Each structure stands twice: as C-alpha cells, then as structure tokens.
Length: 440
Image (cartoon, rainbow, N blue to C red; front, side, top):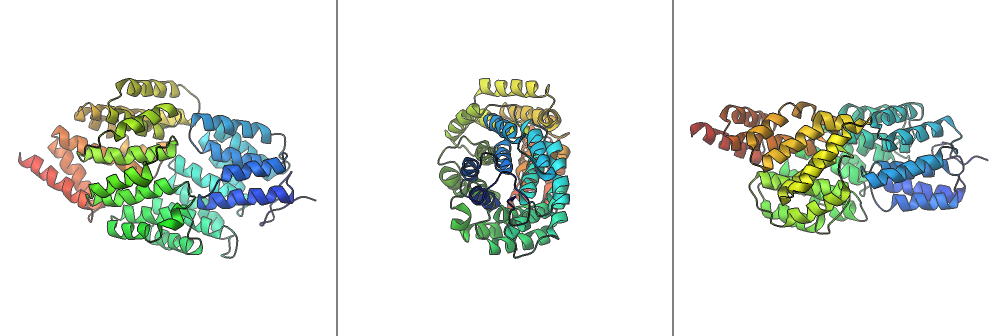
C-alpha cells in the first residue's frame, strides 16, 4: 500500500519510518531551523528508494548557491531518477535536474506546474519560492503562493509557512500593508518561522520604519535564532535598521557578534557580512581587519557560480585590498559568461558590470563606478536577491556620484531616494551632501 503524506500526496518508496524523518525535514525547512539535511539523510537511510527524500535533499544543496553543494545536488538527482513513480514525483525529479545544472528558470516553471496541479505540495511551494528569490522574480514570489493559498486552511500543518511566503511576495511587490498583516499572523501561529519574521522586517525596511523594525526584531529573538540557519540574515536585517539611523557602534556590535563573530564559509552568510561592511565603507567607516578574514573565506568559496555572490565577494576583496583575488574573480565571471546555464545571463546582464563597478569604486574611480551601475540598476533583479539586498547598488551609485563631484547626478539620485524614503535619516544625509556639493 502506497504511503501518503498529511495532504494525501503519494510518496513512492517510503515507509512510515522514512516518512517520519522526511516530515521532520520539511517542518524544519518551513521555519529554517534544525538540520533538514540530516533529517532527509535519515529518511533515505530508512528507505533508500524514497524518491522525494532524495529530491528534497537535492533541493537543499542546489539552493546553497555553492559549487561543491551543487555537485551533491546532482548526485541526489541521479539517485532519484530511477525511483519516481508518479507524475508529480517525475516532475520534481526533472525540476531538481534543471536546478542542479543551473537552469533556474526551467526548474521554476516545472514547479509552478506542480503547484498548479497540487497546491498542497508544500515542497513544491517552498522550493519554488526560494528559486523565485534567487532569480529576483518578485511577481512569482507573490503569485506562486497566492494561487495555492485558497486551497489551504488554517488548521493544516505548515499553514504558517504559506502565509510567511505570501507575506514576502506581497512585500516584494510593494503591497506592504497586506504583507505585514500576513507575516505577523504567520509568526503568531509559529513564532519560530524565521522566513515570516524576515518578511515583516522587509516591510519595515522598505518603509523606513527603523524604530519599528528594531522593536520587531528585538521583541523575541530567541524564537527566530534558536537552531535557525536563517538567523544570520535576520540579524543582518536588524543591523540595517541601526545603519539607517547612523548607529555605527550597534552595527559593528552585531557584525562582531551574531552576524560574523563566528566566521562562516557559507555563501548565504558571507553575502550578509559583505553587504553590511560595504555599507559601512560607503559611509566612511574604517572596519579594520574585518575585511581580511571575510575575504579569505570568500576565496575558499570560489567565484563564477552565482553572480549575486560574486558581487559580494568583490566587496570583500576590495575591502581587504586583495587585488589578485579580485582579478581572479573577474576571470571566473568571464568564464561563467561563456556557459549555457542561467548564471551566464545573470552574470552578463548584471553581475559582471556590478562587480567591475565595485572594483572601480575601490580604486577611487567613482565616475567609472557610476557609469557601470547606471544601466543595470533598473534590471538588477535579474541576478537575484530582494529589494533590501539590492539597495546596496543604489547606495554605491549615490556615493560614487557624490565622491565624483557630479552635482547634477548626485542631486537627482538623492532627490529620488528622498522621495522614495522620505522618513529615512540616511536619505536626509545624502540630500544635505548633495546640496553642499552644488554650493561648492
């Protein structure tokens, strides 16, 4: 007799023992807590023929955006290929194959179809949502979940995760009121849901509600940090609120503590570390030797695998003054652009010119940095990330214009930012600097 999950979906090759471990893995991913890879491994150990356990593990490694992890994802795909019995499982295996070989958009489309046919397939929703994030597809971040949400009830396991994903999609589409409401509801249902917690933080970041954001993140940090592999990113969100208020000591304390006090070689964590140190550099803050430790770990991670990561690695190489590694990264990007996967386009369209711009900024060639950034900032979503993460592009462009002494461009950019974020102290500081520039 076929084993089915709580939503009636057939799980080929599973027994009740394997299903217990697999269910735990899915629950862990819903909240970004625990060790979903370990739980998936236990499911595979119980049931080597459990196709979705292999697929789930493969998804986790493919979404790590690291070269060595991608190799594991490909191994999972090979293991799953002969095991899929249902059309839904075959689609998942196909999606994993595309993802493991860098065909992000094709994997997204297949998982979209899976969720249309099976809106209660939480793994399809969770994975598809992350792919939408890594490809910067705001429309699908909202619509993939919105289509499925009507099939869900509040008493279903994982309902909080669906609300949290929908909250983030609404935020990325600028529907802030609904995003905050759904995100808060998700956290009320499951306080350990780190993704929902972060969705509300995104709303407050985009609305320049720094004090609200600090209160939100500091209200119950144990809930979203305990055993969480999203905690570094959420601490990073807290640091953004302090950064916008000009509270540099708080930002550095967070960096030296929960953000990068324990040095990580995970790309997702190093992105956050680079992003906050670069913001401080833009503000003229000397962060001392912090750059070197971070840059050394970026070197271990390699380059040319995911363009969004490359730009943040370049920040670290520039900050640490590691010219050879910066040139090596650019070479890796040039090689990546000759590939036939989606990262070739991510790199060509946005990643390579942005990485060049960051290097130019580090060389005090501010006019060149601005020249490189201006054509790409309106299409920057193509290489992934969120609005909050990609804001570093605009911040770099503004600072480049100010330092280049380009009064007209600086006034235009700072005026634009003041209009978009009228309550931001940082916007006011930029406007004052632009005004001083025009007077001198």
